[in-house]
Length: 114
Image 1 (spheres, one colour):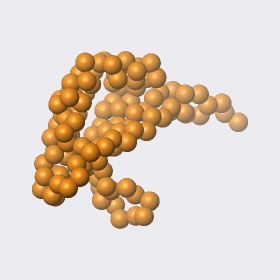
Image 2: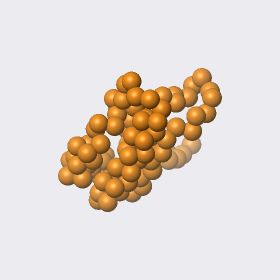
Image 3: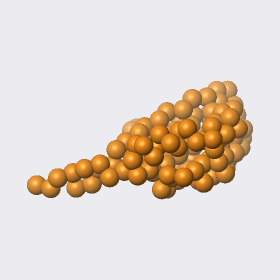
Image 4: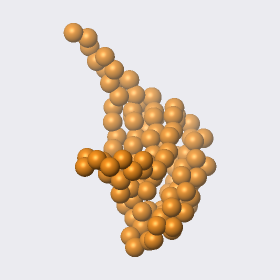
């Protein structure tokens, strides 16, 4: 049996489109949100990896395709994540892009490797 320990921290964020917007507006706002993530979040210290994308549209009952943009940010540990949350560029991203979503769902996970 191998022992496991936390070796990182994943911050997964799902941005849902604004209510009542048409498809063209949703696509345009998703593109702006993706660009906002890239412009404001990639240079924040402690970010080991940042990936952003839109739904793949896979047709399975267990897949949530209702979100507009998914963001994955990897950190070395929770302390790095906490510094990211307080970073001025993170706050600037929220200020500049909050109009492109109706709600945000966050899943934070400790990475464990055996």
